[in-house]
Image (cartoon, rainbow, N blue to C red; front, side, top):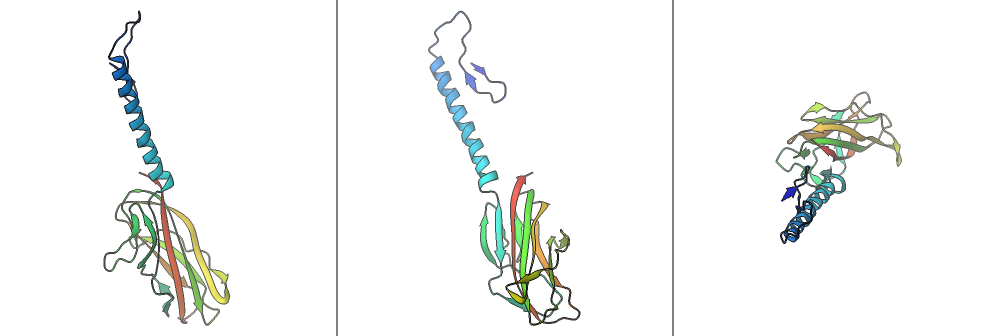
Length: 194
């Protein structure tokens, strides 16, 4: 039985002059099954990579979180959604997003920050395993009310490895430490596996 060069699919042997071979139907059935299996493999892979890639979004269960510090590192303890191995790390003390598959990811975050004073001007950035993974965002602009501001990073491309932990930091640029509160969200989606 002959096989195709790339995938090794079997196909009937028939050398001129034409000779009827009862095994040809078995070879055709084998070819059809192999093609069907390969097509299903490609469809499954495309669904995982394009339709439902690893993704997650997390927030904090009790909102808002109040602080007087100029820098906050949110402890994420509520999964908004998570699929295919990228999600909220539930180990005690983690409170972050953690990936289980290597790849290029788009990661983003935002925080709604409120204060009794107009001096709290928030910015956010991402960290991976405790090290800065993005620049600070632009200072958040007014949102909803005069002293509520939304700071956001809409999509930072990062190469992540299994076990990488992604967090966000929120800071404000006011002098001193006026009281402020924050409502953070963080998300990621794998674009390409490596």
